[in-house]
Length: 221
Image 1 (tube, rainbow, N blue to C red):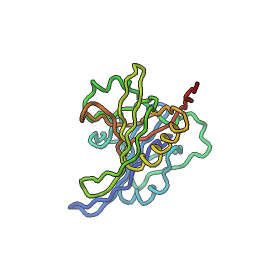
Image 2: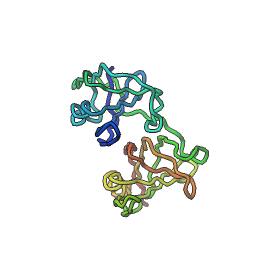
Image 3: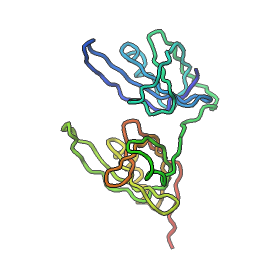
Image 4: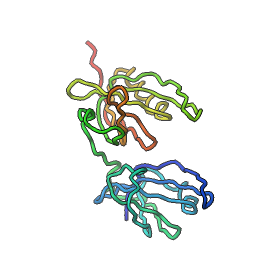
């Protein structure tokens, strides 16, 4: 198959009764069949974790199709690919642009009130406020960052988007600077999770991606 890498997960190490192991996954976008998750483990991780790059296009063969593990895989595809040691993967440096950079399944933010908690969705809306990033101590004793944004939709209502971790310092800071300079950025949220604590809102998870797709200037009389 020929497909573009749209997301790459972190390398995870584990230990169980069968010994030590490691695993990582990445998402592919194919021009006809859409998105599919790819999982690599152990020796395949050693070969390809440092090679796979987001946005690049690859030719991949000799993978195995298995039912998607929906506890860990939020993509709509009912299948996922497991790569084995005999796989063949080649980068396509001169790809023709026939495969999109990203695929969104947009859900109107107005529907959030009616969706179940923990639903994964995509949304595109104007950012109207960005709060400062604040340190938060997790239950495991590790400190992370949290930053709350407000997204506005056509009815005039708004919904909170909570950023966690590095998204606060990168995309969150950039959005803050845009608002401070008199601009209203349009933000595309890929794979945000619905939260129903104190009303419906959206929060980022490890697989969430943010894309600034347009900027409106604020008019000053």
